[in-house]
Image (cartoon, rainbow, N blue to C red; front, side, top):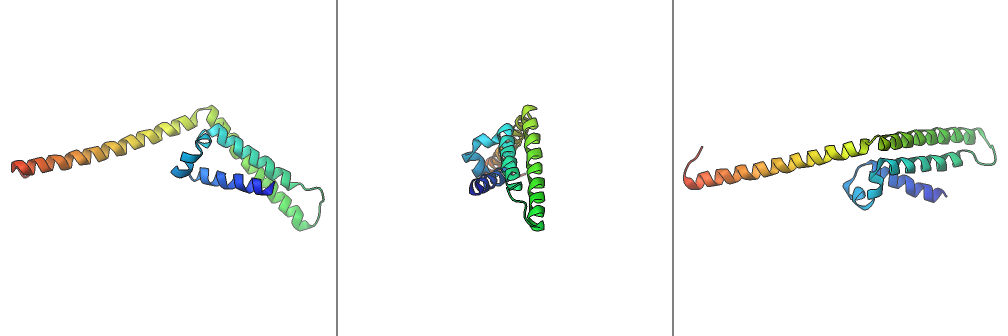
Length: 128
């Protein structure tokens, strides 16, 4: 169970880092609702590990407290993602990213046309 949790945690870290390679291979986690669901799942795994059967030493009790806080933080993040997905915040973010990509493409096209204009003026003998 711990290995499974570690694997999901690593996947979440890679998805949260917004790397295009990861986004390409795991497109499901682009949806905020799916990402929030995975966060809540990880919170449940962490919470399950926070309370083992035997109580133990003070160190184990403090470790249980840290695990509880981590699971609560993951659950809150998951709920925020799910709420944002329901409110379409992910779609707004993707629209902004597409707009930024179009701007960069337009800027590159403008630079290419400007170079071409200078080349044509040079060929005509009109230096500006």
